[in-house]
Structure formats: structure tokens, C-alpha cells
Amino acid sequence: MANDRTRTTASRRNFLTSAGALGAVGLAGCTQSTDESGDAETLSGTINIAGSSTVFPLATAFGESFDDDHRDVDVYVQSTGSGGGFANFFCTGDTDFNNASRPIKDEEEAQCASNDIEPIELTVATDALTVVVNNDNDWATELTVDQLAEIWSAEASPTTWADVNGDWPKEEIKLFGPSDASGTYDYFIDAVLGEEGPGHRQDYSGTEQDRTIIQGVEGSEYAIGYMGFAYYTENTDRVQAVAIDDGDGPVEPSLETARSGEYTPLARPLFTYPKLSALGEEHIAEFARYFIENATDESVVADDVGYVPLTDEQQAEQLSTLEDAIDRANG
Image 1 (cartoon, helix red, strand yellow):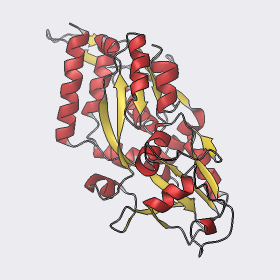
Image 2 (spheres, helix red, strand yellow; image 1 turned 135 degrees about the horizontal axis):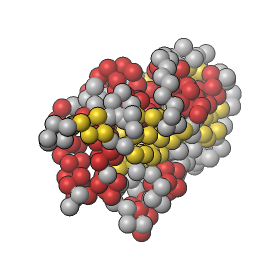
Image 3 (cartoon, one colour; image 1 turned 180 degrees about the horizontal axis):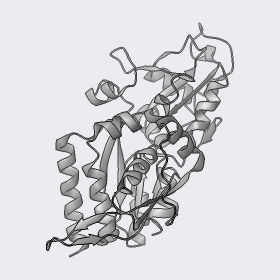
């Protein structure tokens, strides 16, 4: 992809659809930075990123804009799921960053440590994890957290909607969601089912392609699924979002309710994890800075992608963490 400088002006809908379909995108980019003497210094090298399908569109958007000034840096972004990225790419030393829609697990940190890899946790946005049903569904447009847990519980595993509520159709529930390699899957278990709960039922259609979840729910009146908010916002004509009642009445997913803290328990932070040693390379450190410096950009993070940007205070905290890590990497 290093010689491919063709740019497209596809709509956000086409961007998310094609990104989900391809799974991995090579983004040619490079920048002109200026050293202390005032001379232009060209950054060059390769940056490899794997991990969360939820963070994927945000990382891809920043990779593309990084291209505007950095034409000798190649940024490759791959959607593998948070856990799949940690286990198969980042903690084995094959990538420089891992995107994640939940914090790194103890066992993943141990795997990384066994390969002398130190992950640096950086928060990049907030997501409103969204539950969706078919447009013809007129009975489950609002769900309590307990009902949501019952539907997805490995212990309860209701077969029909009537098993959840006797007033609902006695029709088989069709379930679509992320695979167990996904951070969205892990977060849903923690937030809805509970870490010590019965676990996530496995008789569902699991995938790392959010567009496949949309297609599945759209295709069956009796379907339900869940995914990151960005993919829902690009498909509001195909499926409908469920309002979640955590005890204070149903709340619809939105950037506003995620930002205010009303949308509980499904509002969640999103992360990227550069490895410490990689931050010793100038082009990688510069891209990490670029990621965080632009994570407050409402037009990109909220309008173009569909997540809640960092506040100025959050950005300052993340930049401090990053600069400390860069200093250690170069120490």
C-alpha cells in the first residue's frame, strides 16, 4: 500500500460498511515535522495496529488524516476484536498498537510481559454500546437490564420472546452479536450479565463484522443484537435501537446520554494500547500523539465516526501518560 496514494471521498456510511467488509485496511500516511533547528524532518516507517472492531473506524479515520502530512509512513489498521488482537498480534510482538473496547485483562498483560511487551493504556473516546431489534418489533423497544440479561444468559436461555414476557410473541428469539474475541462481548458480560454471573449464551450468531449483525437483525422480525454505537448510527433506517432501563426509566443510546452518564450500564470507554518499546520510534510516537491530540475533535470523533470525544481534561491526562511513556521508551 506504500505506493497507493489514491484518496476517496466516500460517505461515512460507505466508509464504515467497506471498513467492516475488508477487516484490514492499509493506510498510506506521512508527515513533515520540524526539528529544533527549524529544518524540515521527514518521518518514515510502518505502523501496525490490530484489535477492536469498535475502535477500528476511529483509528482508520485518524490514519487517513495522518496521511495528509506524513507520506512516508504506512499505517495498517486491522479489525480482529480486542481479545483477538491482544492474543494473536500485540502480545506476540507483531503489532505496535492494539485497539480495545474494554480494558486489557490480567492474562493478556501476563502474555505481553512474557514477551517483554509493556502496553500503555490510552483512552480515546466513549461509546454507547447499542442493543438493536428489527424495525417491525413493537414489543421490546424498551428493555430493563434484567430482561436484557435474561435474554442473553447462558442459564436462562429463553427460546421465545414469550419466555421473557408472557405478553410478547411466542416466536423464537434470533440472536446476533460479537464473537467471544470481541471486547464488546467482554464488556457486555461485565456490564449486563456480571463477571460472576451465568455467562453469555452461545446459541447465537457471533461475528467480528458489525455489518453482519445489522443484516441479521434486519432480516428477522424476531431478532435482537448488540454492537458499538457508530455502526448503529449508520443503519438507523435498517434497525431500531432499544432504550435501556437501569432503574430510572428507559434511556435511548446517544452521544448526549453517554456523555451525561444517563445511559447506564452500556456507556463505556474506548482504548488504544501502544507498546512502550514502539514509542521509542519517532514516527510511532508522533502518530500516538496525533491520535490523542485529535481525540477531542467533535467533527471527526462524534460527527464522522459516532463516539463521544475526550474532554480537554481527559485529553491532558492521556497526553501526560503518553509523554511519560515516550520519555521512558527513549530513556
